[in-house]
Image 1 (tube, rainbow, N blue to C red):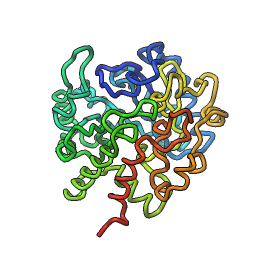
Image 2 (cartoon, helix red, strand yellow; image 1 turned 120 degrees about the horizontal axis):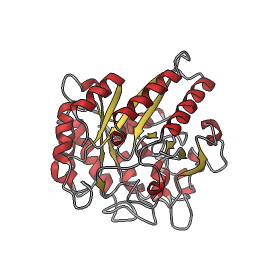
Image 3 (cartoon, rainbow, N blue to C red; image 1 turned 30 degrees about the horizontal axis):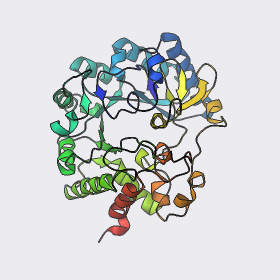
Length: 364
């Protein structure tokens, strides 16, 4: 994950970058400077060569990555592809945006650069605008995002459409939320649990709240997805099915099985672990390294790298029959109660409820 911009043009109240425990973004450059970009390009090429990788994926994230501007995005993507030229490595670029700045001009550029686009949309207007507001006392962003999605879904730009991200609020109607996403015909959608811990429980649910409201909400979405013929991929639901039948990995971070090998490169070259750890404490996502001091392999060999696998979970999780599916939940969601990460997820009841409802063994 690469942050070409460290700032955002929205003020989403659940944002894990700006609204949770970590405030490190305040001290970083707004746009990644050219020397940092150049070093990052060399680190990516170095890693691809050393491991003989056939394909790598670089996610342009933020903040809002479009704030970096056309020139920076063009220079960076072009430089990465040039750096791996001749190694046999293909580069897939994806950009995750809130959609507000996604104009025809930007889409033409991303089409030329072959960068796929994911957009954040929390559903119908009332649901989306409850949380995804402009700066200060700004208005909701739903109308502008919908206009951007109309462009992205048109015949010219549809090949760029990567999917939608939707953060769950159990106060929103789950069926209306699903239908509001499906109307844009995305190839895929992700439903994200807002980040919380045992010390700072999620609003309106989680075990730190009042039961399994998020789980019940997701069950309703799952039923709508099935009833409408699965009009788009939903990675969370597909991962439950795949893990239930075959075990192995998952494409949904909600289940906590995303490898900790994924890192985020900040605009100053600092390297962070998965950014959900911003929910834990100031600096909890930090590796202690930068792209100037460490190669990617050296970072992953650090003693304090997050542990993976069932063996790293607390006893309650290790002994749970659902652990092969849920993986213990997202690491950040296990934190608190004076035991560090040695807890079940704060969303344990929610995840369990969904797995029992959606796993193939429940089919009639």
